[in-house]
Image (cartoon, rainbow, N blue to C red; front, side, top):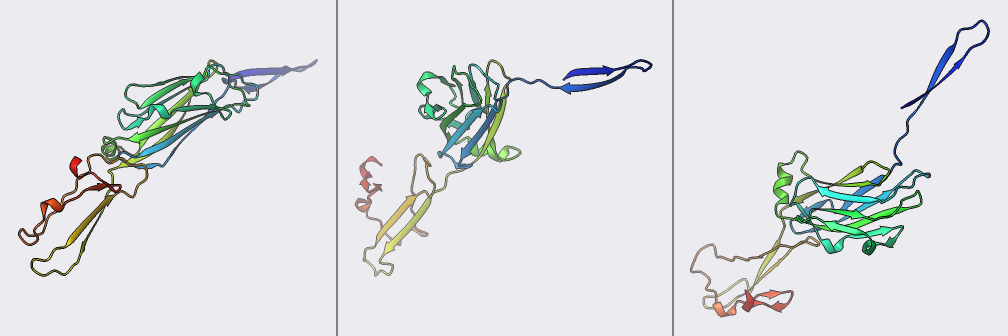
Length: 239
């Protein structure tokens, strides 16, 4: 705070004073970070967006830099080839220095550009929820993973904003049918088992299907009749 004191006096009077105070800050930046969706399953992608600008119409903020990091490593994996940088709507990714860390859970974007009140910098990227994320969410105080972005320039301190996601275990659906449902001894029935997931952008690794009767010896499976299809492609021989 800067104090600016005025005094007044005249013949036969004492001096009176009053003080006005002003505060001078760095050229301010604003940052807003968002994520969609905010609830993920393991293997599902989330789309992150970071928007940086300044409300100060006198500011010239040189060498704008944006950094982004998780509160703990290994929970959301950044897909390095999805990081894009836009300046006033123009894709400037190739002219920036973009560094994604080795753990794929943070990055740094050095734009080399000067921001004024007329400029907006936007960063887009995709992150995938890892198998370690649900346990962290269950043990954390609020059930969320914090992902914090910071922006700064030569003339400013860092400003930060946080986007939160929560991650659950992946969900599968299974549907089993049989035709006919009434059999005589020695008669055959055709079984069909369909497995999928209702969630968009989910990657569930090493899918396995088990099938068993409630009691042995009642229905005899013909080994050579088992066929496995993946999106209508016969993959039996590769399973």
